[in-house]
Amino acid sequence: MVVLRVVRNVTLDDMKTIFCFAATALLLFSCGPSEEERARLQKSREDSINKSKSALEAATNLLIIKKADLVASSDKLNSIKQPQFLRTANEREQQIRNQVIVIQNLERDIKRLDNSIATEHRRISRLKNELVSLH
Image (cartoon, rainbow, N blue to C red; front, side):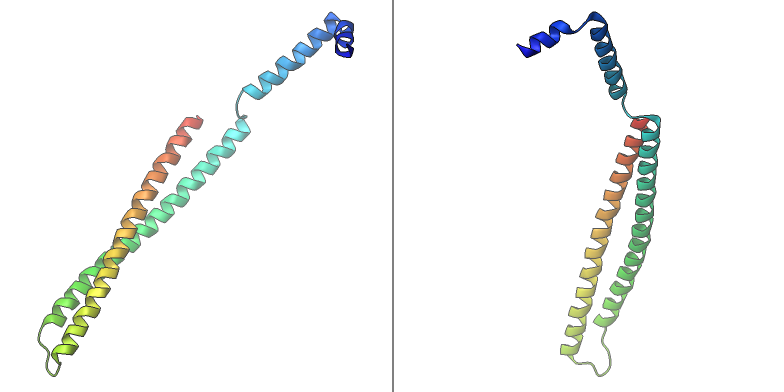
């Protein structure tokens, strides 16, 4: 009953004012992000891309080092397999086992770095797509 009385007492001018206010509010909130918000999002995406590129460069450099270490370790293994003066067969086998472990660790590190690099490439692509969609 009270609501009906309030509605009955609302004039046409009041209805126009309420409608204009609602339409203005709807228009302001439905327009999407403001230019300032878009600029902030774009800056954030660009910063993320730069961070990913730096991480990618660091991972690539480390990968190059690990691959060089792997080649050197393989050469060392070949050297260990050669006969050496005053070395027992047990010492030789232990040195071979130790060097094989070093090589396996390097191979594992290289695989992880390859995965990390692939992940960073995907992340950069995703961020670039998001950046394009902001325009």
